[in-house]
Amino acid sequence: MLGMRVRSFVVFLLVAMFSFGCSSGGAPAGQAVTSDGAMTNAEVRDWYNAQVATIPEQNQAWLAEGLSAEQRAQKAYSIRHDARSEARNKMSNKAEVESLRARDQAKYGNPDGPTLEYLVDKNRGKGLEGDAVYEAIIESSSRTDEQTNKRFGSK
Image 1 (spheres, rainbow, N blue to C red):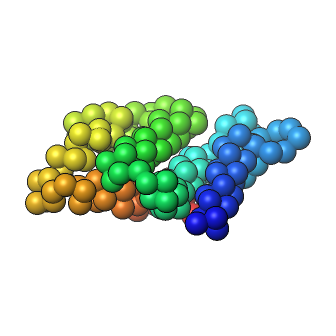
Image 2 (cartoon, one colour):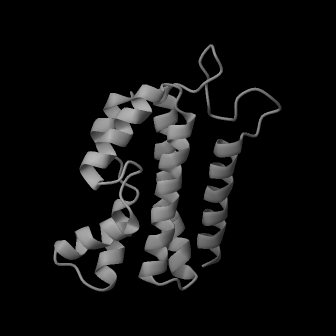
């Protein structure tokens, strides 16, 4: 259990360093910038993928803390949703942001991506019940869209 907490803390530190930077100046650590100081779309997408990649590890810590499946799903959903919003704020090409919002509106009925309620309903529609609904949300929360990764040149 101590190893799990140490690992979770290390993941937290890495995410914090990547998100806020740990260098003495310039761009935050791990972020190259374009000539105008903005991150490229590929860099933004890589940042987004790094954020959601932390969810499985965090879920293990939440399990150790005794959080319910529903509580863990809410946390996983929030991490991904917040990362989506922040990534779109980081994108310099606002026309591409609008195309992503249009995609989400068409796919989920919401320009900001699926709501938690949408995901719950979707999983219930697949015949899942109880905690299985929330476990499916947790499991899917760290999977990103391969086509979008390719579209933006993510590694």
